[in-house]
Length: 155
Image (cartoon, rainbow, N blue to C red; front, side, top):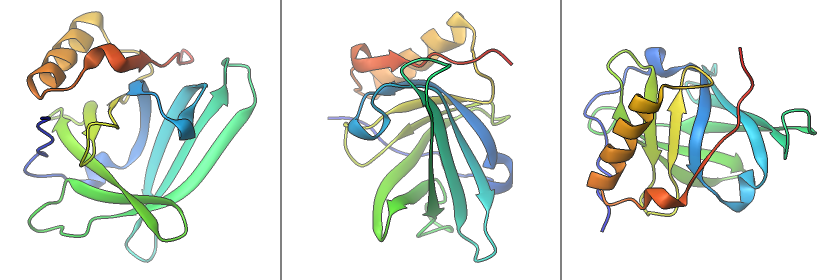
């Protein structure tokens, strides 16, 4: 059983902006993508615009972009449990399980153990920090051997 509890508070304004995918569980909608980033910005209707992008197979491969939306169903009691949609009205979970106090890295999960991401504000993180994040995930019951490291461009 995994522990997918979320952080108690989330300052959305601090969370907005660009995040780099450091590692993820592989899944069909990101198959073969490298140089993956997620950019979050506020929409006029109060929802969050989500732009996920990356390159197919290599950092010089075909550029791919998916634009979606996110919402926080219960911003008062569970501000770190978001719902994200890239297809019509089908929403998936986006749980901010761990978050650096300065919003420099985040561990993202869902209501199952099938999805997992390590995100950072920078394309690369120190090995020591990566190891610490893996330990946090292991304590939560995640199989970190299933994580694939995502190749990123240098800034």
